[in-house]
Image 1: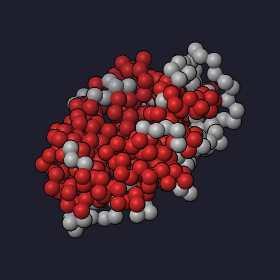
Image 2: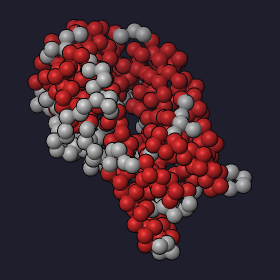
Image 3: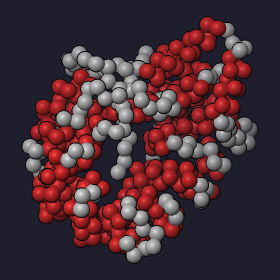
Image 4: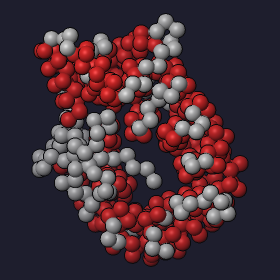
Length: 411
């Protein structure tokens, strides 16, 4: 895979041989899809044409990787171009192969799989977590096979482990075939991410019960301050016994490090009823993330949305630029989970969703992915709060300020 500087030099060399009008048109199309949530389809056509004809810019490449369903109608052309780039033997693994394979995977097209496996064998899969998540459009079973190749071939690599484990966690129980490889990571610096995967797999990871308990109780010498809560949560998911998780995560909430235990208590729901009063008090925390986590946990534990909704709604800031220090997307997601009792949030969410401009904070390589994730969160929240409110055909209140937002935060 070329460095970004090498890519730019190669692209600039190609650009000098092209008509100025063609360069301007391509630049305009790439800039448009990177900036606007609802670009004219012809802009995506131009981006696909630039990449498949080997005349793309840095922005064209990054835009196509993030396109997802927006370029589904071009899947045949992308697949044909990918085969051509791989060569007669289908073994090439260069930068352009990676771009085309990820773009095809983002449409959910299984023709991306041979190239992804080859890239996994040779260290060519995306190492940015947001960028790699485009592959989750593929069926989980097939994606798990690719990730297993990656983990076996890149056993010690930082990005190979963190990104693969992140994707496996998103696969949930479907990641069961990877239990053995994931369990090996409990002996490495990637143990925390491995615990997240094992908890998502559930009972099929029963062989890791003792190791998880050792991390949860601090008996494992590799235990750090972050491990016990995640390990205790995973232990509950694997065994079905909540006692350890309630003890460890409840202690974290009462010790003053509330935000570190709140998401796990929220998942435990009514089982964590003994901690409801403590969680309620944390809704007045000075930290926005803690307030949001506490509001969500209180609602999940008690079923009472009345105290939680105002706290969550207060975090839906129309001036947010997308910086992750503020829990805007998290608050919207939790309001959506509450549903109809959060009806007061609907007008604000509709105004944000109506904005034409994408977020401005993330880098070009993740801007579309993260903005798409946020607009999906907004849409799903509105559908749960007021069915039909997010329908493109519905009357939408004019947007005030242009809002650019960021998402993709796992816990």
